[in-house]
Length: 463
Image 1 (cartoon, rainbow, N blue to C red):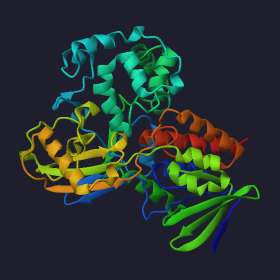
Image 2 (image 1 turned 90 degrees about the vertical axis):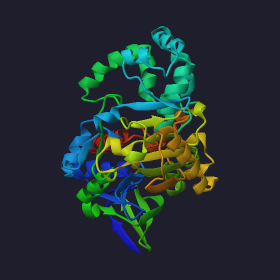
Image 3 (image 1 turned 135 degrees about the horizontal axis):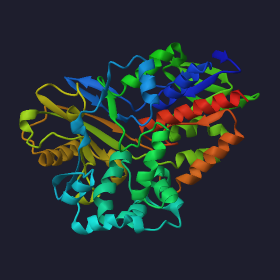
Image 4 (image 1 turned 60 degrees about the horizontal axis):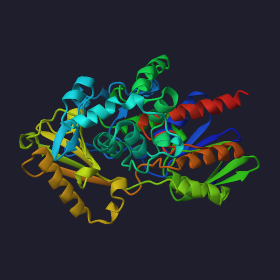
């Protein structure tokens, strides 16, 4: 058995973007960091694959530059030459209504002109500043919140598809406080969404942050996996692959981590351990710390998502390719959630004479998707997609990835989980539960939360 001992060592479990950026920030502060990753490559759900001239991001396809920290990391890991912003055409989003694509209005004049919403719905939105606060915001669903403030039609044809696009979630179940804290804050702090948006812009400017609505979208020439790969390269031998952690035990004030490294049983002693794996994986790793912790971790729901990449010849596509893609409201009764127009947004996504698209299927709308025959799933989604996009001809390329547990859902009642995790960390100093089931699921959120973890550890060390 291999044994490593260091009383001041920090171990990060999981080499996804959360784990790697946490390790990166700690390494820069001079800490002795080791990252254990069970797979043979880094990135977690950030998987980028080039096949037959098509680049397929099988997890996150882009990020939003909501913090200057992102560019700092990109520069430090020598990725500046590969860093790309989305083309301007990617600013336009479409929503499907009555089997037709409508551009999502992004300005007051566009809202007035759009046929996506009825006249009654537009007048309903204008009344938003006169709507009072909720009496029970913590246990209010996104659906309840939006319906109360903006009306049912706006919920059905703007927020419902948006929630599916971000979380693959259900607005009836997602907690507005936990899933969209800044939206919730606009009502709590400023009294409403319209006035709150205007006033909060000034505060973000002071913090050098951008809202997700105004932040630039970015990726890398060879896909999103370029970022975790470059960070891992910077960390070098501190990242150990093929190392699956089985358990963590308290040992004389420190922690003993038992893991399998390429078939060999190993252990490592550390002062602090940072979990950056999904909640369901953390439940097994920390099972020695009680059933209550495992219960809270296991109750965080991850719906399945089927990610399908399709490539076509441009000449066979009659729909104008002038946007990010489209989202589908649940009322439209389609078999997939929406599609991203990859080759419109970023370079190097398809052959010169072709166009590539990513379709998302399943999520909380269809949690049984994993039980269906994959060929039937692909055929149905393809047929619907080709009808919407006015495509004649077979795809020149097709590939897919099935995530049986894709995105953590910040559903109603999530606040109890968050409060429990905070109390657990206080009672178990040295254990930090990180990852995208805490503090937000976006790439930017994961990076900002990693910064906070590193700053917190540094602050405690300096006391």
